[in-house]
Image 1 (tube, rainbow, N blue to C red):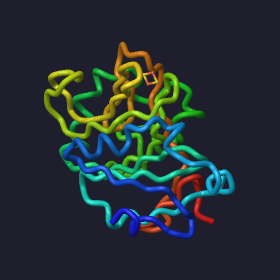
Image 2 (cartoon, protein in one colour):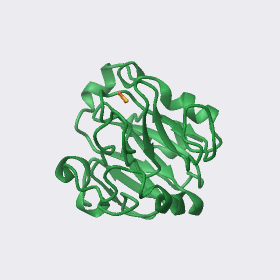
Image 3 (cartoon, rainbow, N blue to C red):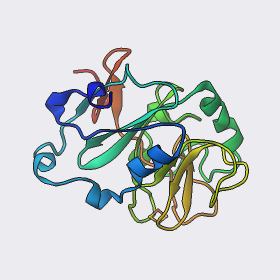
Length: 199
Ligand code: FES
């Protein structure tokens, strides 16, 4: 299924993480530096990546590569969208006001940090020292996370936490929210990552 979600001509690297936890965690836990072999990717540096998101089910996350970075595409469930209200008071920059030009395009300067509430598109690199955080999409108490965890991302390198909109929690080493890359919907099912406007 994962390969079907991606335009093969882009040679995008893809992984699917399920909302249920462990598998998803492993899929994105690999430190970003060792996640990708160079070769093909160097050639593709800078190119926008087209992604078919029609096969992504609520609660599932795909990872594609753009400019050598992992980009997460998470189809949030209505509950996950709702959870962002609860994390509003726990995150350090709820309205994405810090470094907006670098981290959050104008169309994502909202509570969801996205063009559509249900679809998160974010660069999966921690704003502390560049590890790739682990998806901990399942809410609820679990080791190393707050008891009222609503689902989000955990960086194992130094313990930073992000909510399901990639907003960094207060009092963790990471200073900023995860970067939202430029992207645009070419259609209801097709996403172009790396460009803001349709050609
Ligand atoms: S690199 Fe993520 S917490 Fe340090």
